[in-house]
Image 1 (tube, rainbow, N blue to C red):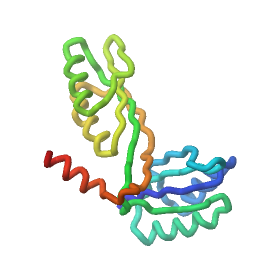
Image 2: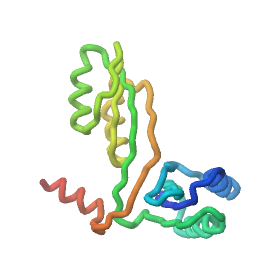
Image 3: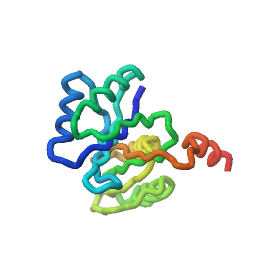
Length: 172
């Protein structure tokens, strides 16, 4: 199972290296990693997706707390969250298929951010499932390049589960 960890750290040089080293020494993989400033000055939030069972995640959490610059570790996998990723996608777009690609992009609320002679570059923002879906739809045109950020997430103050919201949306 994949777990999403939200880690608050002091914003100092070498913190990310120490965390990555901890994972590497124990043979754990980080599937997705996003780092940026948090709400407090001098503090950064690291959001990472890590494969493993509950016991492995508990062990990793304990190890992370042993690092001096780590302030808080939270496994937010089962907590209602808002999750987003950003993806840039360069697609083959001959003149005959360009309008169809743009229509498909609009369905996914993707934006065209660059137009070349034979390509379109799209910007897609959304949950990880949306990223997979648009890639599947556009594969038939030929995808030239993909650049994708790691997942970022914040817990929902409303406590409403994202899956519940999706089920409501599907009924509408």
